Length: 274
Ligand SMILES: C[S@@+](CC[C@H](N)C(=O)[O-])C[C@H]1O[C@@H](n2cnc3c(N)ncnc32)[C@H](O)[C@@H]1O
Image (tube, rainbow, N blue to C red; front, side, top):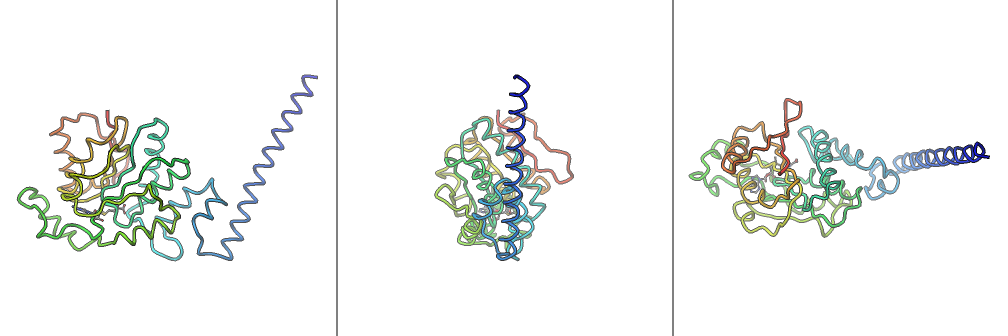
């Protein structure tokens, strides 16, 4: 009697396994047919058909290009997104309150990915903040070079790059079906926008703004809003003056929590706020 019951349970489990495997195969076939007829796919549809592969598809599309368009995120974007995915999942699991924020968004590749991670985890109440001038670095005449002499050298390299409008960033979000009222934009040069920003609590703060003053201002005005258990992440460790800003800030604020570097030559260090 007991053995029969056990056999029944096992055969039901096997049937369930066969059913879920067939469902995955069926979705895969549907996806192939759809992709054959409509190679210029739409992201919300992908979500229906390929939910379990959504983040992977999103990462590949953002970092390798989609619809025959160039990638939205460059510089080893796939690795960077994979790293951010882990940190975002940690703050979700540990219930660390606050928005996901990127300072220096350019085309919005990383923040689109942030929103995708929230979407697959069915998180509706966290905001994603995009902070940028949406017209590139401040022109030399608008820089406070007396206050931040380190910017002088960077200004020559960066001043004409990264001019990408807010409208285009919004349109990139729309392409992936990820623009909603919880995707926020703070437009303008940091020295004007950050001191009185409406951002409240932050759970993940990613800083990718290249220059000394930009990195410094992001830390000065946003780090105090980072929740305990939240992460601050730096994309620009390899840039001399951005690195100096991080070190200066840690020194001035007596932050002893070690930076986590990982084992790569191009680290994206971070620390978890204690
Ligand atoms: C390297 S790009 C960001 C790349 C983006 N995070 C990505 O992964 O694709 C740096 C961005 O920082 C912005 N930026 C730097 N300093 C700024 C400042 N002081 N005020 C406003 N925007 C600034 C630039 O406009 C540019 O879009």
